[in-house]
Length: 532
Image (cartoon, rainbow, N blue to C red; front, side):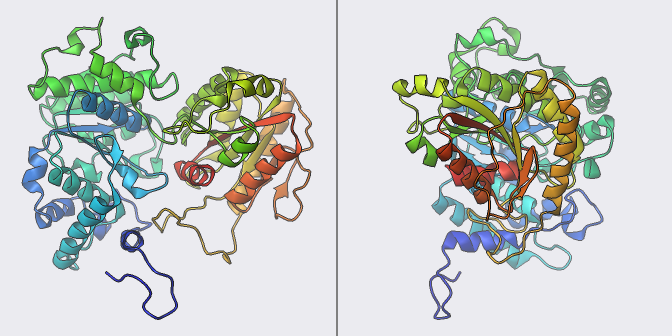
């Protein structure tokens, strides 16, 4: 590994940046689930485990394995928090990361530190490089990360490893696990159809690929088409499959879930079932919550009410504006990117702004709360709802945007402006500052398509009861290359869009902006990096 300036005039490269460059070299456009892709053959994963001497350690791990379309990350987060509060040494593997790849690997609720990450990263990297060949090539990006997670959890001797499936289930890298303690399937819906199939039945079949013979599994209420497939797969493998009801809020002793949104009670219910079963099957519990629906152990309540997950129903005041004008620019982050999750996102956002949660503390950060004396000033200001949006080109933006707009309108919430931006991070580069070169010509054709869809939707909405608030938002935009329409703007970068929002706030002291950032977890991560 090279470090420092080698006389070429190039800036120093930190050990961490060097690791990110190596990791980036594994990224491919090819499908993770394509068996014809030589580097992605599922059976290769077992070869990698041999190379890394992880076969036996993985068999010994006491694993909770969770798949699903929506809510699997939240379910895993709840489960980790519950078992950590029960006194267990926990390992949590989730995806994607928002700002730093180390977010994917959590030990006892905390991202793995840089020093340990680098030690385990290069241990795996060097052994794979030494032992791979044309027939057994280096693993692709996500598969390397999953293998790294197994190495970390084995070396750290965690009591429980909680694994979130990356994509699908049957051919996901996490599915090298042959004997989990318990499996879970979160809510199913339409996503990644180009890989998983075009019907809920096909998608459910891929997710049910994590079922293992005789291993208990739990799911939440599902559409009939999906549930039939899950039940059939469970029956074939003698899997005792149970459907879990959403958590009863009364069981939280007057406290709130750590993750915002009504839908989180569904995920919390699944997490409780998984943890209770894990405790029971590993001989660590004297109470089986599944048979006692009137009480929740104190450790469960603490875990559920303190769980935290970035980028999902997260509220963050802008640091720069907050110091000048508390509560005037607040970002509402939710990584929704499927039609069903857009409905959930809209409901959460509408409820949050109605309940005045613009002053809610941001995740893990209480340093920028408005003082009590500021609340009467904030409450007199005119609130405007702004949408900051982007989505991947494999999505259907017409469907996503219309679902979001209509769901918000049904709650009496209307966006006065939509801002469309390209993501800052790039798919082929991993790192905390993965930005395209400054002289790169930005292709805005996708964002212009999103803008056209939005303008057409707004024209349709105006035929109904839309509240028009004219605040002359176009003032002072000249010179930043933004493309302005009546109800929307396209900006060539996220910093330009955020700076425009800040300038509007500075000029219009009677206005506060409530900005919903959604459509892509990559977008959420990019904006979080900027405003935090």
